[in-house]
Image (cartoon, rainbow, N blue to C red; front, side, top):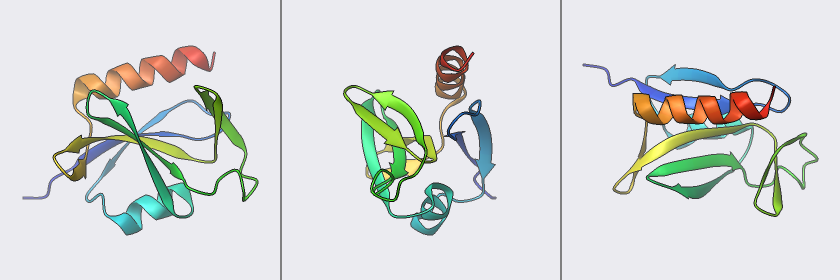
Length: 104
């Protein structure tokens, strides 16, 4: 049985997109963010994964988080112990609504 992982991808100036992956490996994550990953704990077991050097590589600004600008493609998943796994249906809905509302 293949486990499908649901993530929400946020590209600069675009609406959020739900994507389903067969695996959420380091290589897959690096491909999505186009470089080395940086993981930020957003609370409630939700993780934000972005390009560690997005600003240094002059990636396009995506959104503001606190007093920082997140640059480049970002995605959200969840933590399960020490693993990174797909979001629940509820988590997906909340993230989609939050960024859809912010990008109107």
